[in-house]
Amino acid sequence: MQNSAYYLNKKNTKSNEIRICLNCDLLQNVSDLKPGFNARCRRCGCILVSKNSGALNKSLALTIASLILFFPAVCFPLLRVKLFGETKSASILNGASDLFNSGFFFIAALVFLFAFLIPFLKYLTLFYTLLSVYFRIKLPFVSRVFKIYCLIKSFAMEEVFLMAALTALTKLDSIADYEIESGFYFFSAFIIISVSAISVITDSEIWERLENL
Image (cartoon, rainbow, N blue to C red; front, side, top):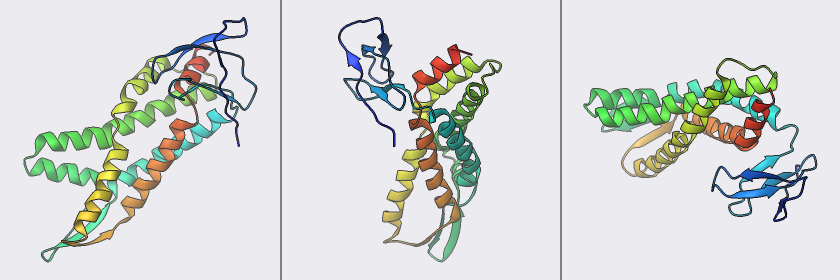
């Protein structure tokens, strides 16, 4: 289990360097870290620098697993609902398609964009960047690709979609019969693994590794 520590000093010594917190934009001095330790922001607690040598390997492995799980998560049916004698199964993509066919074009576009396209691009760009860093090869446009990741990662709404599905289950329980399908389990596993992939390594550490390629 990795340790974490606050290496944030007010004195600007030679061993310190100035870091900006990507979460709250606070500038602060960070001293040299021992292996296995993290430096956290003194305002919000976000990790500024990590000396976890296994972070890159873990993040790359979890990102690959996220991409593998992504397509069954969005293509396989989440629920099978029986209402008024009619049974219907729906996946995320089918849900967006049904909304579009029903004339809800704007809502269908939002579901497709935030529950499918942006999450896919988010982990695809992260995978491309981590692959470059892992093999220490500067792949074409890797810095721009990582900039795209940093821009779109806050717009991916897969966790919100899962919470909406769980809320829908509580509502459906009183008005219809439903059965949880395989897509729900794939989607839940995708959320857990994808969040883990992002949390084990910081954006600042990836930028630092990119600069050293």
